Length: 560
Image 1 (cartoon, rainbow, N blue to C red):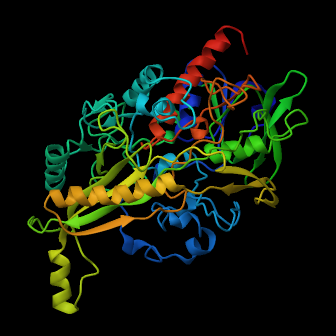
Image 2 (tube, rainbow, N blue to C red; image 1 turned 180 degrees about the horizontal axis):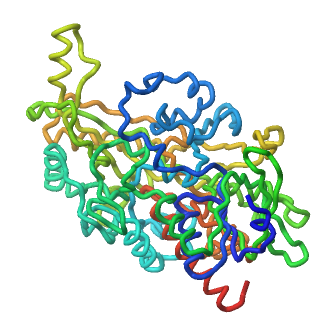
Image 3 (cartoon, helix red, strand yellow; image 1 turned 120 degrees about the vertical axis):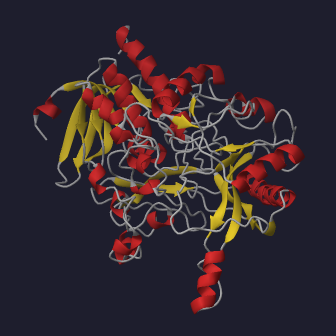
């Protein structure tokens, strides 16, 4: 790293290069600001993508003992495998703690682009039923803005990213700017038509950040399937090859990799952030970089960890934490409820090498809506994700010829799994563990979260309703699940630095600006007031664009 990179003062320092950090760097640098983009991990190139490598070429056939040894937590993520496990953090080097009775799985990447390299890519807007949920059911508080305030920024993100999907005119799931949707299977078409007719519910093709036609210089998806291993055609959205690339191309953005930020540096005289201190990942040297504004985009828990580690005499409980709420109201979607079955009358057989559609179906929330009214057992709601297709049954009985025939016969399966809203609770929180540090000497988090009675009731209902819909569709061999997975399994962590208009009851204002420190912003999922039930990344990106556009205006008005 050239020394002059650290000797200048940037207009903005952006911490984190994932879905939100990439957008912050792009939006600010394209507006003419000088930006330093800091990423804790190394850069990634398309040469290391492995989506076309067959499993028999893996040394351990995806049973590497190194994953078991160094990634015991990360391997709980479906996307962490022998193909790509080095993208994920080494759990031995990056510890965190939990109370014995409140387990939490924190699945993380430390490479350029972060989790945008392996995310599920489902991209759904929130509606005012979500932003103003408290006004409807009396629980907690509303967001400090409404859907019309964010809608133009949803447009910006969708038009750039390329979201394939279909408009449905359902008030619970606002329509957006879409490329043509991917096609449903025969089983999914049957389910869509059946539940619309019998229940009045909307099932749509998943709205995903995967191209179905050429878009912004990127090629459409070629249906190879395993997106979590990379995409050499860049058909799905990941920040290194889109927003970060655009930011660097402006000449206004300096990318600094292997920079593990430990804390924000303050000028106590002016009560302003003046930059950040980071540890160089490979040499473990401590360095500082200066900027007029600091924008945190490191991921909800990681950004809050950095702020909690940035305590000063003025802010002894964490930077910008006069409210005492920093770290609290941690949320992650509740999962575990749903059902699966087979269509015995659909005889399409599995094939050895079919196209692998990289997404599934989405069943829009139908509980506690303006149309359906209040449910007697829980507030808020859930949506379903799933799919239906012929599958091999590699657990078929028999050996030899009988086994081969059973495998070939397979079954036409159908699955629905719920993602439910996680209620915001002060008692779900993260804090600094006084006795635990990572491999770079930075104090680690203690995470304490548990799903409550509302989430449990929601998953029980999800299992029952999924089974009812599958049965009504003519499915057989229905298997129901009604449990609750441990928090973190949805990998949708939000909250911990909530937005609000009252500085005593929130950490950030409506533009993700700290109430306490005027030149500090947090634009990742930390600011969420409620989790809704939709996948959060699209909303995170839209919030980031809105916050950065407001920040640019502040620069133009000489308010920084």
